[in-house]
Length: 249
Length: 357
Ligand SMILES: Cc1cc2nc3c(=O)[nH]c(=O)nc-3n(C[C@H](O)[C@H](O)[C@H](O)COP(=O)(O)OP(=O)(O)OC[C@H]3O[C@@H](n4cnc5c(N)ncnc54)[C@H](O)[C@@H]3O)c2cc1C
Ligand code: FES
Image 1 (cartoon, chains in turn purple, brown):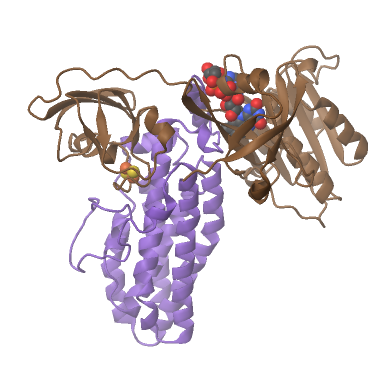
Image 2: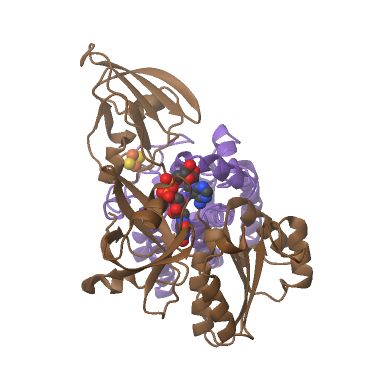
């Protein structure tokens, strides 16, 4: 294993790994954790959104919601496949956690991780009706796009490529959300939407994680992360401010 | 879980003094499984003194050659590569998983694309596959290969490349770079940033290229990628394949457990994580090694906590443990001492667990 130090030095200089064989133990673990967090978030997100399809006011809205559900499952599956190359049991993984489980609407998880799967905390909260689903989708969609842009640069090439393919589709989910939000506001549901934006804003913000940690330093050395959480959070806040002001004027 | 298929060694061609090209024959019912995309690799397993090792080797045939071949260069003291070079015989059977890897771009038969390829030493294998396939399936595309070797007699696929060049004069250009023995300045030594500038200034048109493939040792990959970017190539147009292996060689035998079998049900566990050793005391029952480490505020890796994802994998260096469930590790990993720490409980009074291996 004398290659390992060479590989770590190569990563620090921006090198890319291309196969499971290349991955030193700690890199492997952090990469798997990152992938699990993405997969769990997609599966939990899709499962939660599936219930909303029937609440869509018309066929167009239901098609949009169905498409989001379908594609999120698909994105989860794509990344799970990459985990499989590292030995994860992909068949069992799909049913290991109850993806549609939610906590109560008023529970507050803050930033402490809940036991069970690795989904982002925000995906533990239940959606409450169509307008709420749309608002959640806009706020969370914007966060996903920012996170994906970051992860699409990661040093594990097969994963970076998967994220590059996923990114435009998640971007489209965000657009569908924005269109839905415009429509709701123009049809007189502005205050309902505003309440939901209020509810989700702090919860989505918490999903960016705390300020730079020792783990971040390690992930940065591995080339798995580039920008710190604070920077991503700032980008998201700016993005949301703009969307909100455009929607409610 | 990983599935292995038998592959019969139909031919062994000595390629250079220290490399061989194997032609492999899947069994009749598994030929479909071994259809590959240019640039993919096979992962083999083989037992050495009863211990299983796995190693990957890139396919070096074009997709319509009708054969499955790999080229293996002997690494000094290397287990699998020495075995393949010195001991393997025609008629033997190897075991491999189906082809994997993404070192390719989708073929566009109608387009005229310009490809660049950079290979160092045995890194030529997937490039041979890609070049053959592109020549065959994209009749309007061109390819420039820059191929570095230590010396002329260590060049793998020298003749095959020569033949390809002769059949596709207008479309394939091969530039050899030798560390020793070459008469023109540019074509000798190793590829430094300066040399790349020279090469890209005069011989290789980077601006007109659509895609670049790089396969070689780590420093070469970094140098070339940086030079390509400097000369205007988009990062997304550069594909890498890294041969470096972080896989363990043959395992050292695990130390035998020390101390009696029960000391009030308490185990002294030493956890090695990110180069730091930490000793913790844990109950033998009721708490997994992972949970014990986490409750001692160690940042040990995990995801599913259900024995499924293998994120929490670590190696038992000393002592005895047992796993409650294991859906992710394979037998050969377990034999080497790997455990899923989320499922792992101590049996002996002292254990040493290493997340860094
Ligand atoms: C995706 C992929 C594709 C690959 N394709 C090919 C291929 O087509 N042809 C090919 O010949 N190899 C290829 N390799 C490399 C191959 O898998 C093995 O790593 C290599 O043959 C050494 O294995 P071994 O068992 O002989 O050596 P080991 O017993 O693992 O190693 C013995 C010693 O040699 C050192 N060592 C290991 N690898 C190298 C190296 N590449 N250069 C210098 N020292 C080394 C180790 O650090 C160790 O000290 C590929 C690797 C990957 C990950
Ligand atoms: S955390 Fe997934 S197997 Fe242990």
